[in-house]
Image 1: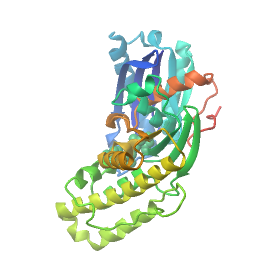
Image 2: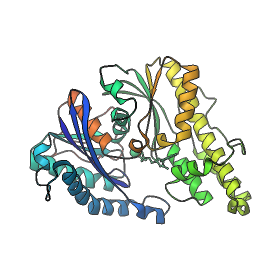
Image 3: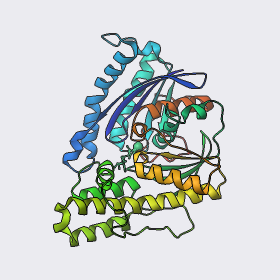
Image 4: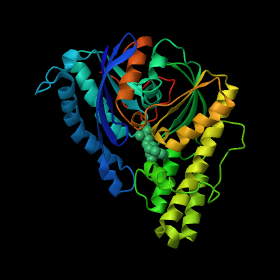
Length: 359
Ligand code: KG4
Ligand code: ZN
């Protein structure tokens, strides 16, 4: 099965070719074009993002064709493709539409089945892409049930999966996403966008116990999160200490303390969800899953509290938005449901897992 995946839900334009044989990945090629232009605005501007997708997608598809079929004009990509998958939601409406329409066009012209993929499903599927633990996942070892912590710029969700098509939402953020907490803190400190990698780099030289920030909802017995209070408390703290922002050690300590506050609540609720829902596996997904401290902390707390539960995480480069994960989710979907109709499928900016995309 050879799959073309397209992702354009936010500010990364991405295409991938995934070749599966006997349930194993035998070839993966991918091209991602990050939209650096948003750094000038300190966040993603939807209109700008859509225009960038329109400019970049044809170019990176052409590059993918060169990688896959190695011909100068890429004319044969359609001949080596069995299925086309693209993100249909959730995400920015205008951004989604550009990638989805590109994919619909390819499916129509090549006469191939088309699958609309949920972006969150894609992040979860990234755990099955080539990496440390993926072979054991694909070689018949049943990882289900799974608790998945999905943490990105737009999402913070705890899910329980009984299968690739069977999701139950355990809890979610009531306001900001974990990635937003990183991004907004970075903006307040002057570290630029995207904030997650910048905070995490600065935090490496800092003391995570230097300043005490709130751990919202950490004592409630649900699986919900809230990060807007943390953001407000960081804002007051920065306003009071604005003259210290020129001191690199202050920035490092502040970054490490905020990072620790975010990680503490994420780990606490994930481990409790795994304990209460009696799962075989815990997995991480989404851009924030690239955070080393989160990965290490969850791994070590699980080794201590849940030694019999397997912990898996995607390779860091598969955590942030990419199209390989969309191709992988398209592959799983093709195993359990019919394809979508490229004539009628529409972008679904608020698509919740567990229901069908707009038709
Ligand atoms: O999954 P993603 O690429 O896009 C969305 O679907 O939102 O996630 C992007 C988010 C951004 O908020 C970014 O700051 C965060 O992931 N992120 C990180 C790290 N790398 C990316 N957050 C913390 N630590 C990182 N190393
Ligand atoms: Zn994402």
